[in-house]
Structure formats: C-alpha cells, structure tokens
Amino acid sequence: MTTYLGLDIGTSSVKAVLVGDGEKIIATASASLEVSRPHAGWSEQDGDSWIAATESAIDQLKVSHPKELSAVAGIGLSGQMHGATLLDKADKPLRPAILWNDVRSAVECGELEARCPDLRAIAGNIAMPGFTAPKLAWVKKHEPEIFAKTAKVLLPKDYVRLWLTGDYVSDMSDAAGTLWLDVGKRAWSKELLAATDLTLDHMPRLVEGTESSGALRAELVSRWGIAKAPVVAGGGGDNAASAIGMGAVKPGAAFASLGTSGVLFVSNASFSPNTEGAVHAFCHAVPGTWHQMGVILSATDSLQWLSHLLETPAPELTKGLDPKPAKPSPVTFLPYLSGERTPHNDAAARGVFVGLSHTSGRAELTQAVLEGVAFAFRDCLRVLNDAGTDIDRAFAVGGGSRSEAWLQIMAAVLNRPLDITAEGDYGGGFGAARMGRIAATGDDPFETLTPPPVARTVEPDKALVAAYADRYAKYRALYPAVRDALA
Image (tube, rainbow, N blue to C red; front, side, top):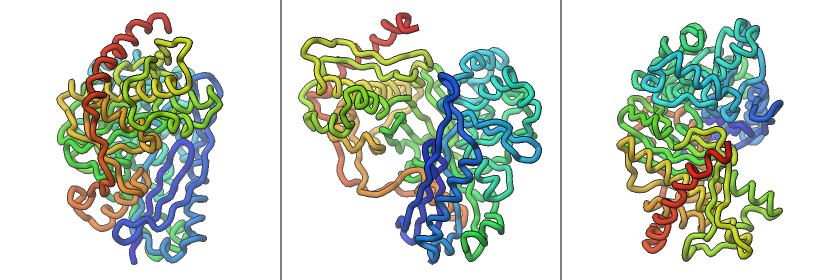
C-alpha cells in the first residue's frame, strides 16, 4: 500500500487529506485558524498558527489511520495565495502575515505601476491590494524597521514547507500571484523585484507544482511514523490546486467556483493576459501551462450577508425559491460588498439593491442576490472572451453549487451547461495529494489528472437565457451609474 498526503493551508483552517490506491480518499482532518483585523480593511494571521494547525491535522491522522499515514510516499501543498510572510535571518516571522483580502496597500498599487511601467506586461496582472508586492511596498513605507530586517518573503504554504523540508521553495502558480514573477517566462523578474526594493536573494527557489521541492525532515518522519521520508511536491495556489483536483489541466478545461469568493477558472496553453478587464493570468501548477481567472470577492458571502440581515439560515433562503425560476427577480443586486476585482478592480465598490418596492420580500431579495452573483460571473466570462478565451462548459463547484435554483440561474446567465460532479471531495487538498503522487511517481500529469465523474448536467433554459441577457445589460449599466455616488 502506498498513500499520498495533501495539505491545504487555507484562511479559516488547515485541512489534511490522505489518499490511497485509485485516488480514494482514506481520511481527512482539519484544524481551525483565526484571522486578525486590527484596523478596517486589514487582515492578518500568525504564520506559526499555520504550522500548529498542520501539526494538529496530521497528528489526528496519526491517531486515526497510523498504518495508512506510515505509507505516505508524497506530500503536496495547496495554499491561500498572496499572503506576505516576512522572515528575518533566523527564519522567524517579523510581523503577522498580511493576507490576500487585506486592502491597506491600494495607494502603493498605483505607486508600483508608476515606478515600473512594464509591470502589467511582465506580471500579466493589474497591481491590486490583494497581491504580495504592494504589501511589501506598504511595509517599507509604514514599517521601515521591519522591511530592513526582512531576509526572505514567503507565501503561506511555503512557510509551512520551510518547516516541513527546511528549504525555501515556491511553485509557479502561487508565485504568479505575487506581482514579482515574469509569468510568461515562469521566472522571478529582477525588474519587478526592484520596484519594491527587493532582490532575488529575498525570494525562494521556484519549481513546478508537480515537481519535488525537497523531502520531509527526519524529525517529522519519526514523529508521524512514516516508513520512508516522502517527497514534498511544489504544490499550488488554492485555485490551481483545486483545478488539479478537478482535473482541469488541459486547455479549455474550466470550473466555476461558488465559494465565499467566486472564481471562473480556465486552463490555457499559453500566457494570455487581459489586464484591462482585471483578468488574473497566472501559471498553472502543471508544467508549460497557464490559467486565467475572473475573480469576484463576494459570492456565497453575499448570501451569508443577506442571511445574517434576515436572520434566516442561507439554505432556508435558497430552499424558499422555485428550483427552476420562471423569470428574473424584479430587484437587481450588485454583489460588491467588499469591493470587486474582475472586471472593475475597485476596492471602493459597494453593494446595491435597485428596484425595491413594497412587494419586495425575502424571496425577491434572495433571488436578486443569486442573480447578482451570476451576473458577476457573466462579467468574468465577458472579459475572458475579450482575452481570446471561451469555454464550452464548466464544472460547478463550491458550497453555492448545492442550490438548484442557483445552478439554474448560473447556467442561464452564462448560457453554458454546468457539470455537477459525483459525490466526493475534489478541492485543493485532494489536488495537493495528486501533486504529491506525481512528484513521487513521475507520472505524466496530463495523462493522470483526469476529471471526476459527472453526476448530471444543468443545461441553460432557453427562455431564461433571453430574459437574463436583457437583465444583464441593465446590470452592466448599474455600476457606472452608481460608482461616483458610492465613492
């Protein structure tokens, strides 16, 4: 028996996924994480809490499945992207890590683009507060003593890797979210680093996600009773790792993730940026492959906000809708509760309800929220099209995909069939385990990373497609009309 371990270093928890023969999930374990918000718009986390949570999750597997854990031959990593983990010369964190959803560095984004006019062409992305480089520009300006002591900058999963292997390593997909990577060349850019007064010495070594980044330290091999030191794969950023889990590696393979945030992900054969539409163009976690993403900040988060407001659980809100809506809600919703990335790149954007009347009730507001998120996904598809990329269909994943009404709305708004997987966990932790397997075996990722079985397909309702096309045009006109009023 040979097994593989996937570690998903998320924002709210660390999850460990133990996978056996036939890629069957043997067991999972998790440990929670806390986020600190010392000021409005700030989001931080104690880097050592990732290590403690990883220890806890694997310790749980040691108790529940010692035999299977002892057979681990490969470990893979999935991680929350963009987090700035600043280490001193002794590899100790100098301050809490600044996370992906921290928006303090908006001013520094403009300053970076002015300092490096080629930034978008090299990085393939607009400078946004979520990325890592603007965070370091903020630290240099506001915490110069911390910046001066910074010897290494690591992403969250790569700080955990340092503890696992003792090596400074990152992978191409996660590194692409720093704004320091030449994404087309899959190498650190001296020009982008210089814009934040950093050098190659501050950066980890780069490997592909399915390649080895080192081996598990002997101390940890002994702690968990593993027979032979397993290889640790490069791994990937959370969305790329989820794509590995979904088998979305060949060009054109796509998924729509209805999670806290929303992602429309498509794999590409070449580097294909569209910075004007705020499309994310990143390296994929498999060699010689890239991917594009449209990213919206409040997908199921919008529904959770309404759930809190109406003091009604979110599943109850969606169950109250017709599973096959006959027509759009009379109310239109902009889901920009915490700003927006694709296509507006506007941290100041805010949510709006339009079309309220005395007859507007829980059902109308709920349907409007689901539709607003779907329209935001349609914006993502539109700017992907502008970048020369289209999709024929997509897997629907994430918590929101459990709502039949939401699936029907999404399929009609996108005018694309949505495939629903058979029961199973195909997320970042599973994708990480798959990368651990390939790093250990040398298997061809394009042959072995197959998609999961399709349980069913939600086809677009033709009548709804036409109705939503008309409503989408009005949705698109709404943001420019209210933008100045919300500033």
